[in-house]
Each structure stands twice: as C-alpha cells, then as structure tokens.
Image 1 (cartoon, rainbow, N blue to C red):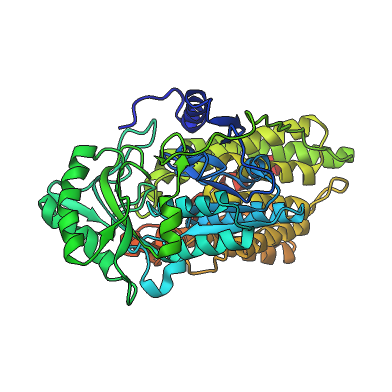
Image 2: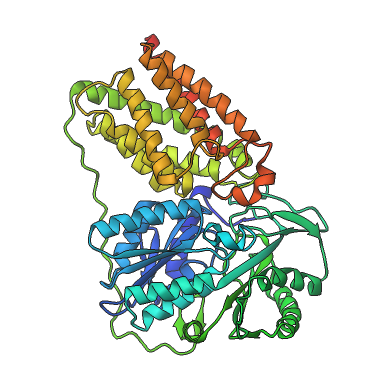
Length: 573
C-alpha cells in the first residue's frame, strides 16, 4: 500500500517537487513537469515525454542528455491535461521541432494530440509518438491499438539518442517510429497496486495465481494462471514476444526486464538467469540488457519483459551515451551552457463584458458546478470501484478533482462579473486541467463547447441549452471518436441530448425537459453493463467489463440527475 503522502490529491504534485529538489543539478522544475537544467543546443529536436504519475522512473527520471528534454507529469495514472503538456513543451522547445512521446492510452492521445495542435498553430512543428508495445492488449495486425508499457524506455531512449545526434525532426521521427514498431512487451502481476489514500488495491490476484497481460495503470491481467517457478515464468514472458520476431532477423535485441514496483531486484535477477538461457537457445543476443525498475505501477507486484528487434541503426542509438537521474550509459560531454532559466507566467483568464442578466445566469451556473463537485466527491469511491472492474480505478478521483476545480473556476469567474458563456467555458478548462485523463479531456471540451453555445449578453432559453448540449456531444464524439455502443459516456450522453432536444422542441419547460433527459441518461448508463467496450483501457479486458456499467456513463447520468434536482429548486422559487 502507498503509505507516504499528505493529502492524496496532492501526492503527484508533491512527488514532482521532491524529485526536482533531489535532482536540482540535472533538472529545472516547471509547472507540472521538469526540463533539463542544461538544455540542448539551439535548433535541436526536443523530446518531451510524459503521462500519469505513479510510474517512476518513467517519466521524470529520463530527463537528461541523450534521452528526453523534458517530462510532464499528470496525477496518479491520469494523463496530464492539454494545458500542462503545452506549457512544458513550450519550456522545452529548442527551435528544431518537437516530439511528444507517451504510452498509447486514450487520455494521453487526446491531451498530447490537442497540445500538438496548439503548438503547430503557433509555428512549432510538433509530432506525436504513441508507444504501442503491449502484445496482450491487441493482436499483431492491430498494433496501433496496443497500450504502451515498459517498451517506453527503449523507444524513448532510441528517439532521444537520435535527437541528441543532431538529426532533423523528420529523421528523428522516422527512427522513433521504427523503434516503436520493433518493440514488444508482455507483463504479469502477482498483486494489484493501491492508490494513495485508498484502503484497498485496484485489483487483487488470487493466492497461487498470476495475472497475465497486466497494464501499468492498475488494470488487472487479461486472464489468471497458476503460479509457476521462475524458470517456467521466464518462458511465459518470452513466448508471446518470440511470436512476433521479424522474418530474417539476425538475433540482436535490446531487452528490458522491468519490475513493477514491489518485485525487487534479486527476484528479477533470478528470472534473468533463466531468460539468458532461453534467449541463447532462440538465437537471440541481448545488447546491453537492462534489469531493474523502469516503468512501475506504484506498489504493484509483478514484472514485464520488453524486446526491441535491433538493426545497425537502432543498436547505435540504443547503445549511445545518456545521463539522466534514473538512466545512465557511457560518458556524456558536459553541456556548454549553464543552467536553464525558464520563465513561465500564468495569466488570469480574460473576462469579457456581460449583461446583468447573463451575469446572474453565470452565478447560477457557478452554483450548479458547486453542487456537482459536492456530489462527485461523495461518489468518488463508488465511481472508482466501478472503473476498477476493467480499468485503472481512477475515474472517481478524476471526476472529483475536475469538478472541484471547475466549481472554483466558475465561482471566481462569476465573482469577476462573467456571463453565462464565460463561466461555463472557464469551468470546462479548469475541469480538464485538474482532472487529466480521458474523462478530464472529454468533460473539458464538452463544457467549453456548451459554454460557447451560450451568450454573455442574453439569458439562455431552453432551446439554447439544448443546442449547447448537442454541441457538447458533437465535440466529445469528434475528439474522442466514441459512438453509441462503444461503452463510454457517449452511451448516456447521446440519449440525454436526444431527450432534452425533443422535450424542448415540444415546448416543455427546461426543468421538466432536463429531468426527462436525466432519466433517459440513467437508464442508458445502466444498460451499458450489457455492452462490450470497444475503446479505452477497458477494451483489452472486455470479458471483465461485461456485467458492469461504464464508469463514464454512470458519472454523466449522476451529474444529469444532480442538475435536474437543482433546476427543480431554481424554478420552484
């Protein structure tokens, strides 16, 4: 169990501050991340890596010469927000373009992708590198759908070395994509991990069993098998990777045997003893293998094996020198420049003029956001439990944090005289920034789109609210790619929007129309228990998900019901 923390929701931020203080000679702290203390030369391609916290030494431990230029850290197991990624990327930019690297998880894809679009709009050529090495999460012909696990290390190491060698952005990206295609991983769990402040692990492995094909965000394995001696486990780890050996490959491999947080070095060395014989029997030659903790999952008991099928080019960059807090190889020449001084100023949001009537509506919206925050805090544990059935269990935490930040931002905007459109838009931005992850990004874009459908001058009528709901749904499906039947929040959101629009078209009052829509959303959310997930972290664990509703759909329906209750009170006055 994770025992050392103050406030659970500050665990990641405090750990980031401690890391930067411990390595002040190597990294410079920036909001939500770290950059190299001695930056690379002007014109260099910058490699930004990141994702949720809880995986140290990934990702902060890999900031340094020969590897990453910067890392951005989200909350535990939650993607950093678009604004966080963008801010750290701007601080790391050296003028040669940027590569944004992360494991292939929905929240990271959304937030890093949106940050890249924002950087490109400002003239910074930003590319996306989503690592897809986990063979347990999708078949070989669907590699683009695979998760990124401990293969992050060899892919980022090779990409970072190519950038350090002075290659241009196109060439670095070509090398990085080759390394990603050549990297495969498979992992096992002996027991689950526990989020800070929680009383129980996200999942448990039955005594005498092994969870096969785990994820690194607290997801359970795809199946359980009987516990076996180390020699047999070595074969179980290796066989799924051998199945993907390229035809004609000469046998040179980068190998990473990775502990997940609670399985220690001596145990890993026992496994490595057996793996060396197996690799030799298969005609494979490990090139500078790495055995230790590289991509962890808090206190999870388990390990993973990663292989990168090397050629001359990949081997050169895998073996190249690097000097970071957690990964050192060879000798790196001292940087010519001194410490990096990073100036990042976060300005207050602009509040456009608003009519008295719209300001009153904005204050009402702020009150609704405050009530949502209360309700989601109360439901945090239950939403986390639902999410843990086939996910990482952080949904309740993300919803509680996001809604609290949204309520605070809405209150401040309303106090500053903002109208309805601005209050709701700023609430959405704050939700996305604080919640992180997939749900944070989707709720953020949803509330912002809904806000933009309103006005800072006119009081919205029922039709305008319904149109805002439609715009919000459209934004969610456009950004996230989910459709009805995929077992996501869209399965509750779409019937909510349809019912709200139909009821307002019939001329029903807003409170009545919203109540009907909330009922439809709740019924649809309950029905997701029968669906098989087609997107997100739950997809590789589809069988575990059947029989349990989708956490995103459940939380959306909950929010709809809370607002329905508040609207009844407002219109009853």
